[in-house]
Length: 280
Length: 315
Image 1 (cartoon, each protein chain N blue to C red):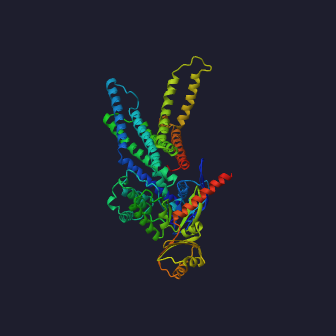
Image 2 (cartoon, chains in turn green, red):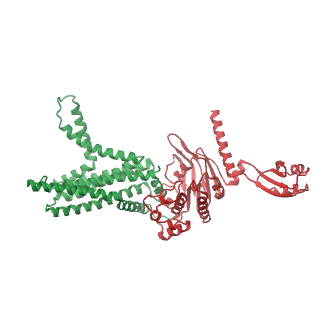
Image 3 (cartoon, rainbow over the protein chains, first blue to last red):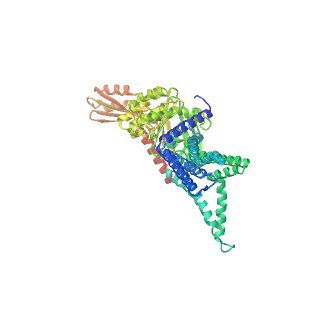
């Protein structure tokens, strides 16, 4: 038997899986449809802002491009995470995962290969969107704020974290249907909690003692705090806000935390895949 | 080449493999037999690292899979029972992907050579989903042979194929056998195993019942050789002459046919022929009947079923 070295063999497996996934995504129509749709919606939002400025003479918000950019980049992040969920669980269901593991592919190589492919796509789209927004700024004669570049930087880690969650969900789920449902449930619960908290905060409890609304507000608030530290979406706001406050240490800390959670989810995906198995 | 010691796999509801100890030697074709649910696929999954054994040891090429994962996997070619392909890739792209994975040198030449060998060159740019079952199985073989593996693991390679497909796959296996590749072949098509395997293991209800070459298995089942002889006439002295031959256990004369059961598996046809011709008759045909693998297999598995059910009743 020829000995090349474990790392070299693993890197080769990662590169091969990465290349294949990248190629399949770029040659498929869905990614292009989602990328185009989200940028078109972002354009519509920017256009509405510009109309507002034209009619009222004032800016609706300090940074015109912040919300549309967030919208576009989060849409793409969620889509890539969702497509990872579907791809991995479909590969297990169809036997492709088993076929890959017949050869020199181990759990780490598989998870890293899949992750790298989605992150590369995300970075490519992020670069494309950044260029698009620079063009919009030039066309609209509206300067892009300093926070925008921090947002681009922070969104790299947000997207990477989102994709890691997608890989984790699919690695431990049994079927495409289950994995899809679990992932959608996570996204919906995160969004619902955000909505429930703002709804509950508007209710004034009649009595301070043993009031269920108070208890509910407290529970949702705790969950919200936990989500602040877990949700990839909140890292985007948190990081940008810290940078705007000039708190470089906190900004770097936010990035480090996002990377740590991302690594925890990837390591859990490897363990989940080992535990769940690669066979149908 | 492959060694397992007390390999066991237990699922919450069933013990799929119990204390299986195998030894596959370098360069041999090893037939792995067993009825459905015998634990063959689970054993193969453990050999490939797809399932973790509950207990026991296994090594391939003398190394443990956990410690030399990539080296071992790079030296194995696997053809599964169900051929899996990437739906969105053509056969050529699929093979290129695997050639990259196995770091095959001169991959274009190697893929072209193998496709031509199995007659799929003209279909290389079609998707495997458009292939017939036989073509898909041949493509699976090409994938498994791309990196010239030292060990081929074949799980039901001719299952579901028509006679023409079976023949083509058989030729591929024969070629690999001649090339000195160690082949571990699991199948329930007994005639295939009988034809190709040097040694055979029989699994039943998760247990390894026996591991031997075909003659050894036959001898375990039946310690006699049966000979069928056709003569021109049957003189009265024939019965006495046959009774006088030392190794004849029993015989039966029906018309011009004589069926003789001889002790052991040694060749006593010369002695029998001499005794018969001495009675003045002429032998016009002689055929030695050995127990087929199917008979041997049935005997092993049936005996085991009886043994297990009797043990259950005793309890």
